[in-house]
Image (cartoon, rainbow, N blue to C red; front, side, top):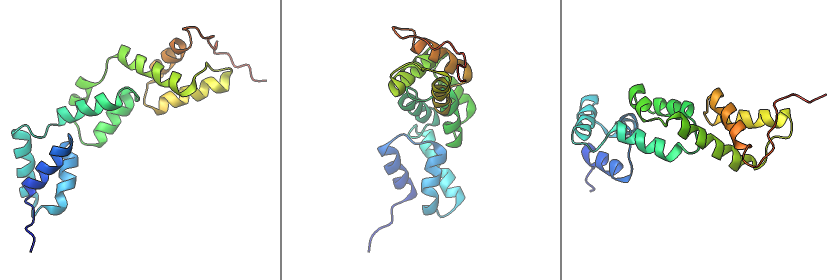
Length: 159
């Protein structure tokens, strides 16, 4: 007969593998908990001992995804994962870092400046999908293609 793992042991196993937010840890442990009170007690213990931290989780998430995604997407994803808005806001990259990320992403994806209005719109949609706000998208497209590239002037030359 096999011994069932305790809820605490399961939590430690999950946390040993990677940083995990409280909501995700709760979701993973819920099927194994005898009651909601037991689950909350284990979650509280993990947080009190510093073994689980939403701040650390958000910081790691932003560090890994911040080079490819904008603040809007990062904020949305972390909110969906149960991290509170104040924690996320404090950890989001500043405007210059986000602009540099957007420039890098658009250069990597498209390699050349847009040749016409449709191509410019495609690049804008791509950056918006990645979670960059409108101002950052416009600034990134302007900056991305000025270093040795000919810049699209923004006029619609479709006939």
